Image 1 (cartoon, rainbow, N blue to C red):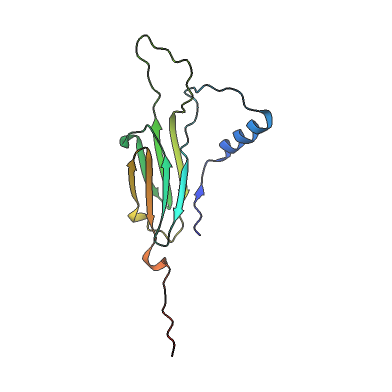
Image 2 (image 1 turned 30 degrees about the vertical axis):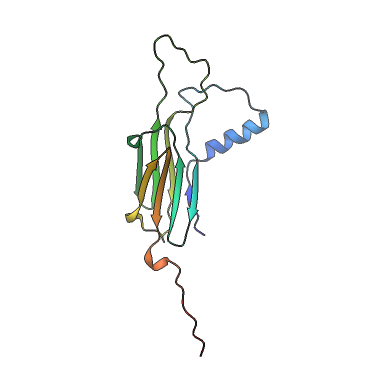
Length: 142
């Protein structure tokens, strides 16, 4: 099984721990709120795919890079503006810039990373290097 290491989680974990210790209060989003998309990671014998939940973003709001064995997905969900005569009574949507990074194991081909965005989901596919794919060897009975 391949393990991808997520970076920059300490602050979110501390918020979660303190929130559970001291209780949660009603919350209204502000521009300072952090938007962090959730991710599912699925591995097959040929590749691993990361699917990010990023509804409301446009394709141009998302950037996927691989540098020195680290996959980074960055982007920004912009706050909604109101029209004349409207006022926001309650806003629970998170918005702002985000960055998620994952250290890639050596058995994946960083040069062949592919990304596809559709219906609010960003899927990043990392193909396994050919020499690291499982090989099936036929056993002869003789």
